[in-house]
Image (cartoon, rainbow, N blue to C red):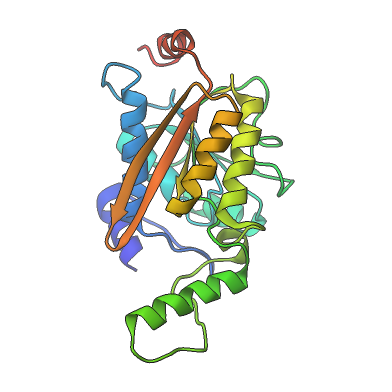
Length: 262
């Protein structure tokens, strides 16, 4: 209900709902991500954030909620491709689009047929994307998610809890990935090189600070030309966005001049 109120008040979303037990994301954190990467794009054009549907974003794992595209469309008028491996998520997100006229024509949903792929199968070789965003699965398994909840509860209360009940919603596909966030991001970086000329900036949330060393090593191995890290923090949670590109300075200028000029 809080999300519905926030989305209605700030983003003109008349209808928003998700299937039971699917991830209900905190709106402020999602807005923080969108505004941060908007500033990143603006830094490539003398501080002027590019707006309008000519700016195309790819939301990897759009989920049943579609919150990243909702915010990006309202704030900057961008267009979005939303991908997911779960047909129920895609159907839910499509329902949200159809019931909100402000979203129609600005979000294209694509099912990812192979859970091992991130870009292949959903991005064609002849299309260009200005920005990719992702909130990767955090846990390595459902058992890992439950153990994390137990740690939180035991830290917050003197009473020892032995029956883990998740303190957040989420379908298993949304919460976990074999190897967890670390493996998912490593795969994303490896696969991003195959689309180095199709995408201006890739980005992802990195929840665990201990994973940053691995992330930077993988980015160096992939021979990226530029890497940026942005701290994130809402409430008691701290995180960060890591963004990377394969474009040279000359290619960056050409990208801006050909795609973003009025």
